[in-house]
Image 1 (cartoon, helix red, strand yellow):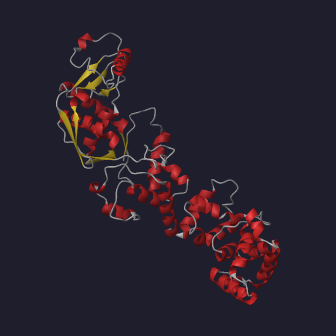
Image 2 (tube, rainbow, N blue to C red; image 1 turned 180 degrees about the vertical axis):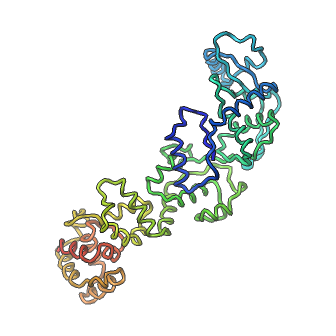
Length: 428
């Protein structure tokens, strides 16, 4: 784990803590204590001095105004806006007074640079298209491009796996490795993730922080499965454990085309993992989700007991933890329930009469389980010579105040005998 914090303005404690929190939530663990790139600054400067001594770097004294004019000239001529090498071969004795210098890498200007990539294959760059990048800023701090090369070498990094928008950076870094006489790591540049419409992924498509997906109610195991499957495949397998992903994953199976982020697929995968999840764990996660919803009685022991009882039925219908919380809304309602329009339509006069008789036929506490309730209601329906369809929706309306819920026997069981019968009698 390396925190690349050379950009001091962006590398706030809050931003770094968010990285740790996001990875921890996703279940991605790291070895040893994190390494902070900025703390290695002295080592980075040492390497810059080595490059200066070997003639692979030089001091540049261009003023901000000169650099602006350089960019404007390139723009007007339709050329890429690159540094033109003004100070590449000039003597530092020619330096103007009062201009803080930077140190630039003296990149080769002839020939080509080859990046051997595990995903994209061999990628060749014309050296005259790569300018002399800055290694040391005017304030004496090293840049990211230099720091990552030094840190990767010193830390013994074997593989660099990142987005293909860094391919050009790989060419620049390969040149630095060569200048230092170091062996570069293995590069693997994976295609960027696109939105459903094929455009570059944005916040509109779902380019959000890990905490946003946590707050939307996705399980970390679902996110791991979904993200690993974007652009990589193992036959036709869509769902697999993290241990299976570790066993199966290889760079050769990464596609070269951008994968598309699809919320519908993510929701369906999340629903699968919710159905597979332990009920006690889901209850705790749902209670944590409810803490963000105003007015939810998460500390109420009666409510918690009802939620635990209802979880097997609730999780069959939910695609996210937020949907689980919303589906459990009927458990917290106080009597008399406020009925939706559809619930009112279901509770016609004849239905209310049947519900009154049903309340008298429901079992005592000992039989108050989903199975016991199903048996008792089946006997009632047989005795009354009516179908379940005539009773189910009015009963659901009386118990939940709405028209959608888990199975009616699960709803009865989760509310408990006293609460359920009182809710029924409120509508009789």
